[in-house]
Image: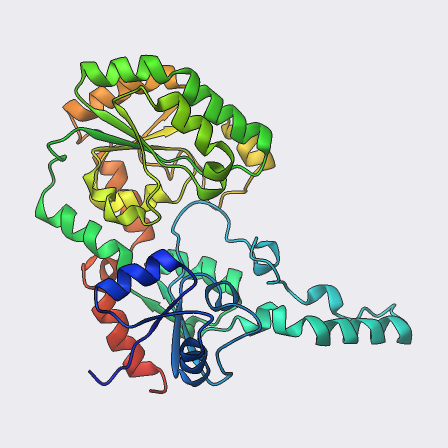
Length: 362
């Protein structure tokens, strides 16, 4: 009750949903929102301050920023200089070198002064949530934060999954399979994955009918923008294939019996349900060479069978539906590697608020 909370959003849909629920919300460009941001003692983000709140930096320098972040997985923690968020960058390029003359040093100093408000120096966090000590090390390096800035607990989005796993170890009664591949930077590789899926729509639909199941396709937003209309057209008459455009996958993730993915971090969220996964990765070698480096060996840290084409998927899925305990030992081993026990309480939101009140200046 002593906290005055305000949700700041750029999305009209989010605004309407929260307003209808009677929750405090403001569009980011309103005077009220700007006043809240300028006076706030604490700001909570799950990406970057500049992407979540906008630029120029709207919160005041004394605001303590709580960073939730948004992923657990194998991919290397890219430094902010490689992010796709426009304007967020490192200033290393403007550091003077011993061989620089006065003119070069002056130009670099000027450039640093101009770019500073858009740089990673403005992305400092008073507290960052991590689900375990293993991920903390990756984040210390990626965000250049000291160990005392971290708090080990679950992500709030995980609470529902953890609770669902505790309530029942059985698969949902309705046989639902989720296909959620990661995004590929290469248009060629991205197109190849989509075309392969669409070329098999009819046979997949027949198989799903035979086993009384559905397949839900959930693509990265970048992929959906490029191929959404074509996917909708091709799957329009496939009654067993559905499309999920909901922005928040965590509302429905617990409904699925099996996850089919490749290199996506969604696998490490689904892991909390202790349910089967199929890693469909026909382009593994090419992905590792051209797309993204991995921090851990793929085979060892992916708890499920590896398929090289859709031809293998039906038999693998049927085996898991018949016996979901296949690979259970590997799933739990990898879960315990990435997640500490404090991350699996199902009460992450409360724990984060309590810790925030304990350590931040409010």
